[in-house]
Image 1 (tube, helix red, strand yellow):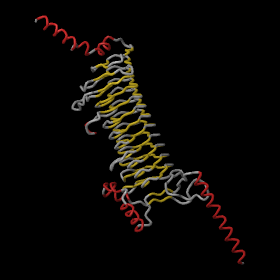
Image 2: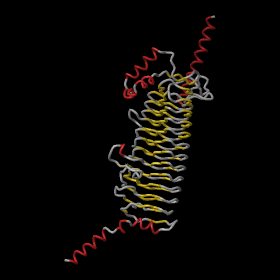
Image 3: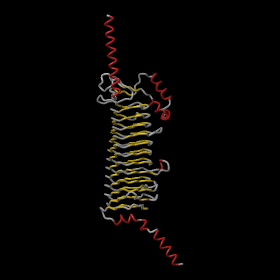
Image 4: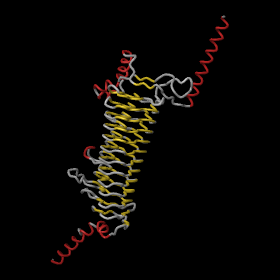
Length: 431
């Protein structure tokens, strides 16, 4: 009997051995600086701390499973490389300074490449350490629960000079959240099914290029930040009564260029901001192409293309130094403009007299009826009562060149010339 009990205790102690439960951590503890640890094609059920400059490289089926407890991987050393593995099942705690994440980086000059971060509160949490690379990772938050109960795909807090490139992020509260972080480069990421694809607070001198923000409540929100460049991004299918492709709020010195705004409730929304340069963007099939509030000033819009939007631009309140052309270069408006001399600039200024902004300032719930015939009736009535009111004026509207349009315009000019010649000859015959 005693032998059976001892045998059972021995087997149980072997199964629950802390050595087995910390197999990966033991490899890290015994590694030397600069070592490369090749992980096996299996699942490690543990949480680890990397506190020396090493590389952890996995295989197709390498998994580190945090079993829904706290942060799965903490990096406390510089020059760490973590790549080619799945890290999953962080805890969901947000009640302490150490909010749970699949990976928490706490030092500089580290690299996180080709990781699958699944079922995470925060996917990647960059905290304090600078000059880190986060490249080609697939990040997924918790699928259950409401948006407010989830964390961020990538959380960047008080860390500068990072490269965030080629990542796919979905089902998090915000895709990438910035806070007090400067001089970062955010390139070619794809973010969807979040609250805000990009949420940006109190951070300066950052560049966002080639990103896609699809089917979020808000594509990107730039708030209380200066000297930002947004270039070659796509904002699409961001729908809902308060949805937008891009919002700029409380910011200054922002350049928005060569972006595509497609099928959003509002393409671009600007308020409480100044010195914004918006040029060479495409606004296509949005409910409202741009919504600009009277708290914004010194905004310049040039060479933007507006096509098939319900309303191209809405001004809410009295505008403050808005410029719809610069150096005799205006914008491509969705309404047809005559260019009889074929110089690429409209023969007369473009004027938009929409008063939808007045209605929105009184009650933003008017967006609920933007597809209703009542809005069109309201607009027409205001034009009849106030025919001379012009909300937007572009003295140099540009012509969207298309082969068909060029042929049509040439035909019109040719026909007009024929009519003029006919009239002149008829008058001569009468005399």
